[in-house]
Image 1 (cartoon, helix red, strand yellow):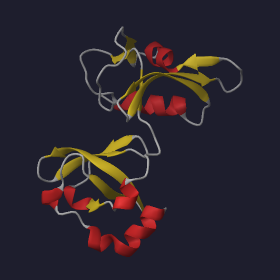
Image 2 (image 1 turned 90 degrees about the vertical axis):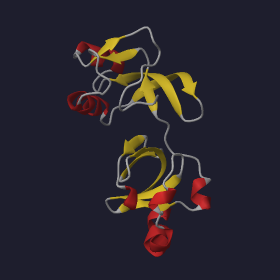
Image 3 (image 1 turned 60 degrees about the vertical axis):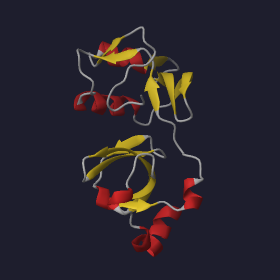
Image 4 (image 1 turned 30 degrees about the vertical axis):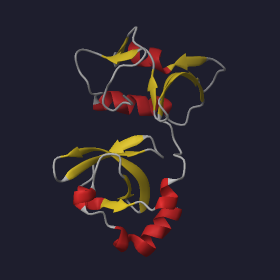
Length: 170
């Protein structure tokens, strides 16, 4: 909310020159009516950038002209989310990108459910490899999200702790 108010007051003076849109640059980007903090992680040609919204644990690809300078005091704040990847899980076949159906199913399975997360390994200071046990709605038992995705044909078990995928944390 603080960022949204600030950008309403001072946004015009904080427009990022497209020539200064570099990897690892901290930026403000508007999504709907709110503003989000992010980091440019990749330049996609001249017109588009990939931005990690680290307060939300997701990635967007807005036009470079939608980037604004993030003021120093907002750069110094810690991120509010930690991106996590499920351990010992890989995609079916030779794909490197999760299918739209698999992502939708995962969102559905996670929707408003309690669970227990165990961090198996941290990746530098920005992400973690985890296991996630979801509590069943009507019982005290839990289900492994990994096992659910495997049983539904969305993923396969692997000995590797982490496998690079899109979206993903590696």
